[in-house]
Image 1 (cartoon, rainbow, N blue to C red):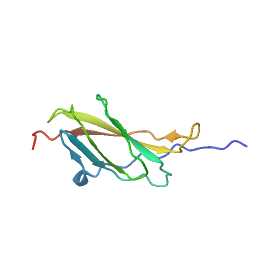
Image 2: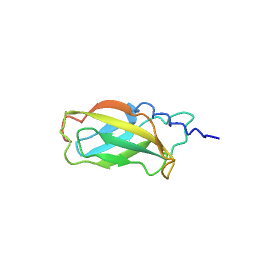
Image 3: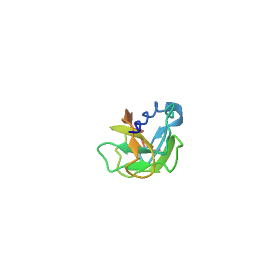
Image 4: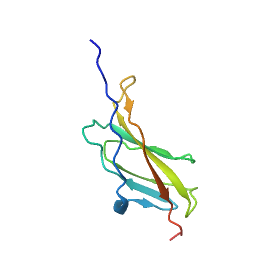
Amino acid sequence: MLEFILEPMPPGQIIENETNFGYDNISIKWTAPENTSVTKYEVTIEGTNYKQETTNSNPSISFGVTSLVPGKHYNVQIVTVSGTTEPDVKRSSPYLKQIRITPTRK
């Protein structure tokens, strides 16, 4: 009997009032996907070397950055990951959002 392992659902929207796109620190919070077993999330800022993973199923991440340009727009991609060992690891289609880095340094 063949067993179907379903692709996890993508994360929900970024929660704007709990998110910060600073020039030296990124903090992102998003809604968790419904009816999906989540092992972790992968967060990528496209066009940069920033790819971070959460350590658990908590739908938020914070990390320091050094080369983002204040005021510039970047695309953020968040992927839900289910499973811990290959070949059972499955990734969702990405949630994509264009963000703008805080335009001035505080």
